[in-house]
View 1 (spheres, rainbow, N blue to C red):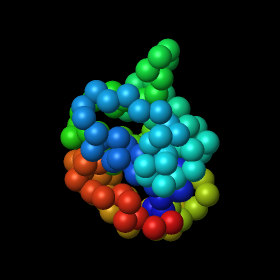
View 2 (cartoon, one colour):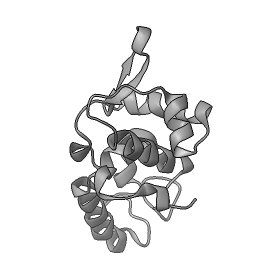
View 3 (tube, rainbow, N blue to C red):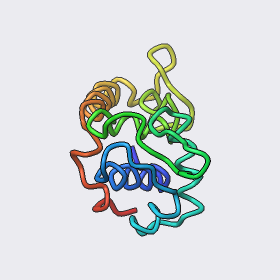
Length: 137
């Protein structure tokens, strides 16, 4: 599995936001500047994270985003699925179409347990437990 730029930026944005005081509302542009990421791109990513239930969007005088739950409760898998899609861990890494037990690719039965193990590990790994700013594209 390869992280997209969007997933990388989402992990960095949430990590930086999670280091702030719980309940803080921060604009996407401010957060992007703090994380040294492109602001217009971050705004689009934050919209996806809001739709995925990881962020809350605030309007009015305190416009911006806040975490929908404590950063300790947001897993890397939550972020990746919000950005890449809920079927991320069901996709075949070797062919462009999804394979399954009924229509397997040649490496399906080798990859399946590795894929499940990776998904399970990422579902237990909180965003605050990694430093995604060290992830290079």
